[in-house]
Image 1 (spheres, rainbow, N blue to C red):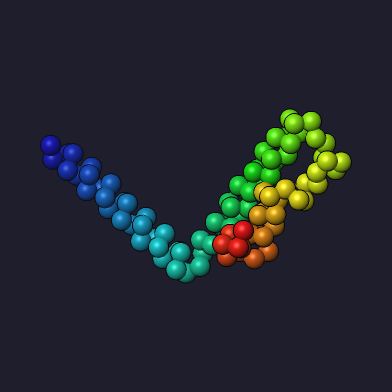
Image 2 (spheres, rainbow, N blue to C red):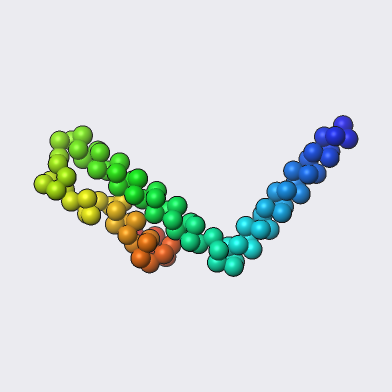
Length: 90
C-alpha cells in the first residue's frame, strides 16, 4: 500500500512540474511557434483531404478547382502569415 502512495505522489509531482513548465513556456511565448507549426500542418492535411474528396467526385485539380482556393490551404496560409489570431477571423 505504501508503494501505491509513493507512485501516486511521484505521478502527481511529475504532472505538477510539467504543468508549471508548460504554463511558463506559454507565458514566455515559447509555445506559440510550435502551436502555429502544428496548426499549419493540420490545415495542410485538411486541404489534402478536401482535394481527395473533390477528386473522388470526379473533379480535376487545376480545371475544376484550384488548390489555393481550398479552405484548408487558406487557413494554413492565414496561420502562417498572421499567427494564431487568424483563426478567429476564419
